[in-house]
Image (cartoon, rainbow, N blue to C red):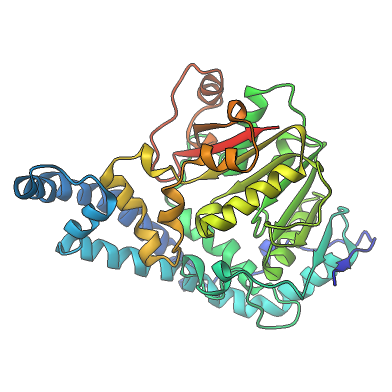
Length: 404
């Protein structure tokens, strides 16, 4: 049974993001972890590729008559190497440290966080809504493991009306990408901002009335669509109640009327053809391929004629060389994302076609992060006059999608 929390009111409430405060030592640790991740993911990763190209690959070729042709072959050749073992250990520990570095401030502020989220849900000053379903069955892809090594994953509730994992996710992701995000175009960038402005430039007549984000967590990749399409109604679904509570409070504090609901994206309660734009970000690689197929069929159902669906994901294995596939698939073995590699083996266009989208409307494109290029460079890309950077740490995004 759904429980809808909606009320009117104009009381001023603090931004839920601003409630946790780090101590001096916590802030120093967070900065250290951010730069440790940058060192591991950028600097050491380049050195590790050099180890492969200068030592591992020539040795393998000498023994086998050819270079490794698959990510698994590269992995088996790299795993015994001390450099890889050290890099992998550092990466794993940096991932755990990311979340641990913000847990203290979240735990201290948790009563205040829950209080603000509850008040916002009752007052809804911006006019958004929050629908929770306590009877929803949490899919095994979410409940079996702490995805990204984040304690509690996206759904665990430790207290009544809990928002703890939403807060850990919000503040932890700042540490996660803090030293890696491009800063050429301050105040811009990220997945949703980049996709939204790409759509505006590429299709100037496209003006969606309703936008749906799948696996929205706290709405970080939903709310930026408001800036590009201010007249559109925003909707987000996720299976985790704590992240939805947090995301709803966040949207209301920013004056954005977003509508969040706790649903499994495989089978939603939205009407046929309700949305003009359906999006997701880093979502499908965290679920089984069979679930991906069901969700894309559901996307087709809720998408209006003339609508667009577009999903930011990891590049398919067919588009990358064996070494980079090995590098990307590390998460499948060590970051509690077991479906990661299997998803990347799929052909996104074939998945869309199987969901009922016409072949001629399906496509795959790589776009630059809007924060890493100037506005003119981004516009030149949208016009087809420039090429996006190669895939690396937040420099560009792979999108697959279709029209209806």
